[in-house]
Length: 304
Image (cartoon, rainbow, N blue to C red; front, side):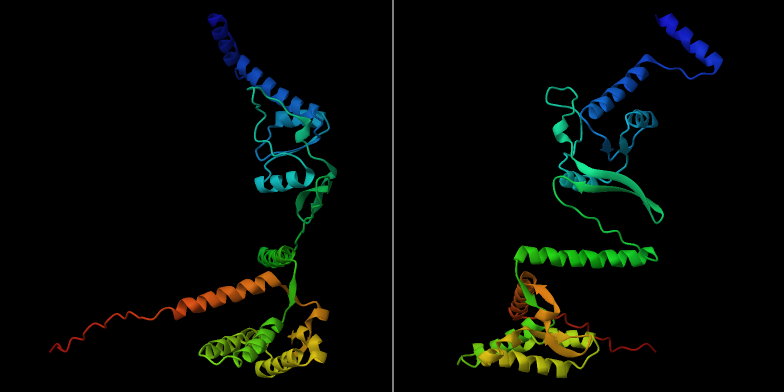
């Protein structure tokens, strides 16, 4: 047997063909068996994070299946969540054998490959488990698209916050102005030193609408004065209760009903912002000592 293998090597070397060993054929058969197990379960679209050899692609093409290689792991997890599939790192089971169960497969109405701009995209439409959507951004250059992506991400985070808190408040400085008026009136009802702290806190809340007006190149003093007047009327006069929705219109430089205009903010974000700002102020006020580094003494001697 050994002499036969040596002779085979000699013949292949003489003819110019690369030697082929029996275990290479077996390795190819194992790969083919794995592919057949996946196809036998009913899979017609295979997505993998690794590469797929051309020999393996041949088996998928012959079976009429689509095989996509080098997919991002994060994308595959999202696809599995939407289609009801399971992310499978290996075909090995508890018995030490390889198997593929049909229950691990997901389902979608259509999987197509379309060309958008200069890229080929795989589109999965109508997933079975849950609804999903993709946003395709197109721009003049990469910097423009990156800025669009950040804006879209911020918008989606706002929607997420709204769904978490299940409540919204009017934007445009309406909450800060209303809270400032309320705290000012509440401070006058106290006869202790807390009155000064509450009054200063109420005054500091007006920084938000003032900053919004300044960033929009509007008259901050005039707009904030009007905003305070409206919210004061809403809290002191029952017939003007609807004025509590009034906020800044930074496009026109006026005040308006931001509830009707659709300018809203998540309530949980507003509450957390006030809490964090208050905690930061308390931390600073707790610092009652200051350590200074003494300056180095100057040398009075002068060189001649």
